[in-house]
Image (cartoon, rainbow, N blue to C red; front, side, top):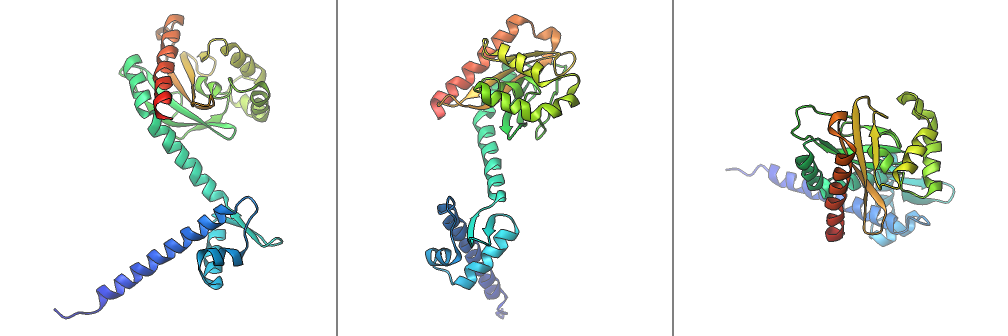
Length: 263
């Protein structure tokens, strides 16, 4: 068969595409290495081995897409917001993967709906859930949904066990948003959070959702930092005081064991 040269041209384009990707990665790594103080074009080109014009062209594209920022006065590049957004997304996936089996175990044991929540700025973000086998499903939040920190048992568990000043600062920042959720105020939420400290978990009985009782348990890493929260939610009649304690203990045992073996 006659060689038309198409395959060769395609390979050349692929090689150029790969080269462009590798150059972009090298630039990002170099800026990241100097991110605290910033880095100028000449140093980026020198450390990556690229011609100044080539480095500048790629840097312009990265700035336009917000993967880098450029200070025209200092003539310095820094990492941009989009990289931090990707980092947050990667962290969410990491936490979800790490605790997926744990929430499956909790859902199997309780037969109720179990949620995995993390903090995102002054919001709570639901990153996973598992529905139990109990026929009445309680969906208090969906995957990807956000709410102000403090709204919901798990949401409150993320912040109630932080130092007082941090807890109060978050409540103050969100105070104007709480009125969207009935008659709740920052003072109400603060009081519930502080009462929860003696138990080590948060119980919400009809506070955030009528007819629903939720147990929110903070998840700690080996440094004692709250990295997530697990919530078990169901109808009120299934969640007496004794069962709440059993569920909180079971969740604590599951995640505590996992943290000791995986961190």
